[in-house]
Amino acid sequence: MRFKGWLAAMVVAAVAMPAIGKGSPRVVKEAAPLDVSDWIGADSYPLAAIRAGEQGRVVAIVAVDATGHPTRCRIDVSLGSPTLEEGTCALILARGRFTPARDAKDRAIASEVTFPIHWVLPEDGDNRQSSGPVDAATIMTIASDDTIAGCEIVVDGKPQATDLTRCGGPGFNPAALRANLKVVGSFRMRLDFMIRNGDTPPPTPVVPVGSRLLSMREARQTVGANGVPTNCTVAISGEWAEEAKEYPRPTVCDSGQHFIPARDKDGVNKAAQVLVAEWTTLLPPAN
Image (cartoon, rainbow, N blue to C red):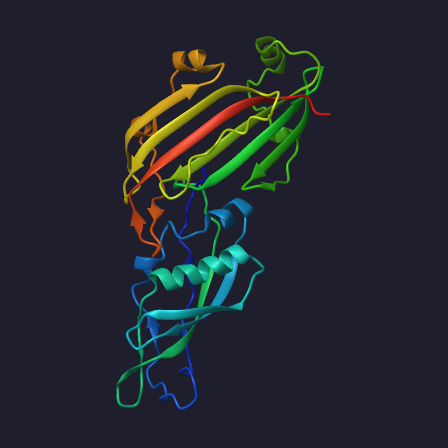
């Protein structure tokens, strides 16, 4: 699974507001964002908002101190997306830099600015993979006549709107799968996909009682602050492990796939160990 096309959030404008507090010096020269392209880039769009298909205009009120650093942020105009609202303020507070406002004596002073950001969902083009955390699962039900009878998709614990066409895919052969598994009647398959970086614990396979872990593939790599992976290793386990080893897939180091870098608490790109795990489970029959 990839989340393609990471387009930078677009800043529309920044408009000065009166200085904070009674008796504050009058603003003569307005505060203004400084080098916005340095702190709003292709990795700025919140992952959860992309997965939820959320976009639109958010307007924040930002308190800027006399050194040009943002100190507080609140949302003035909302588009109904908590993820983008929180992402707007988090981005501004972590990365934002401003030229401070000036008073009549040309002294730098604290003030507030109105700062709109227009979040635009990305288009295809940039196919970098997330550094995580990412959690996605597909649960498919195969009927006794080898047709797909159910399809569920869950992302970050939230069920997604879906239909039967989103399960299976070209070349999927339920009858051959049934023969391989030696099962009768209807059966259910679960396919999990998870990504974790060094700040989050590794995933644990979801294997309910009575299930069979058919395959698990753990790809580990060091991802630099530039998103380039190195030191790729792959571990394969489960009932289908030997067959999978006969048809190895290229690692991201071999394929040239890059990642969206992990970030530190200040929003700065950093190197991290990244684990991409995929596993397939035969679930017990539904009650």
